[in-house]
Every structure is written in structure tokens, then in C-alpha cells.
Image (cartoon, rainbow, N blue to C red; front, side, top):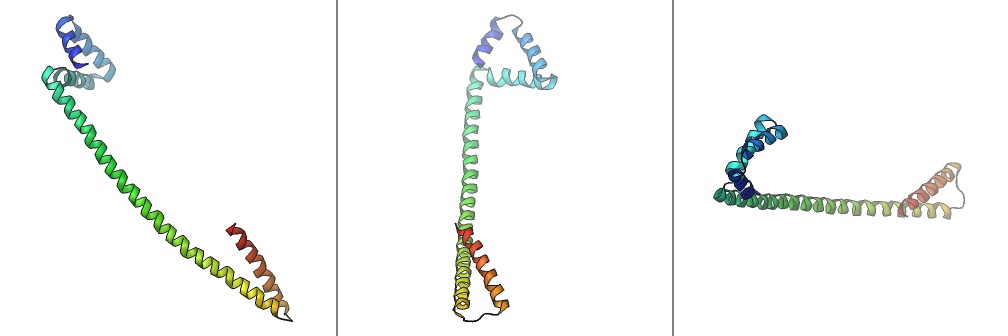
Length: 139
């Protein structure tokens, strides 16, 4: 739109003054003047506008590349974190399975005995209930 504004400034009387008033009302006094100067010298000038827009486009490309690099680093860090968590889970799973196996062995030993004391019977019932609870966690 820069070239159209450039042509309007040359053809339409008082266009420049009206445009300045609109910018000041929209953006405030200082920001309106800055906006007007940016349009006049960077966007509307026939030769400079092409250079300005090309640099603006290259800046967007550079920003996209930089954001992509940051995103890739974060993605790799997250993947490594997940892999470490998987290793921790596997080790805890082995410990859990060993614990279940120990409970089952203990229960079999106690069931094989002919006479159990009251304390052993209470312990056996507690271990059986704990084993059932642990097996529910697996499912």
C-alpha cells in the first residue's frame, strides 16, 4: 500500500495533514508521529520501500529459523527426559514384579506349613490382602 499512499500524497490536497491527524488520534501523539515518519520514509518512498520490505521479510525468515532451532532443542530435551523416565519406570517395574514374586513365595511357604501361630496367620492375611491390592495396580 506504500506506493498508493505515495501517489495520494502527491495528488489529493491535504491528504498528508489528514493522515497525520488520523495517526495521532489512533496511536497517540508520539507514536502517531513515529508511525507517520515510518510510513513516509520507509514504506512510501519508491526505492527505499523495496529495501525496507525485503529486510522485513528476511527478518521474519531469520526469526522463524531461530524459533525452529529453539523448538527442536526443547523437543530433543523432552524426548531425552521421557527416555530417562522410561528407564526409571522399567527399573521400578522390575522391583515391583520381584516384590510380588516374594509375596507369592512367602504365601506358598506359609500355606505349606501345617500349624501357624496366630501372629503368622495375621501376617499371612495382611500379606494376601496387600498382594491383592498390588495386583489391582497392575491392571
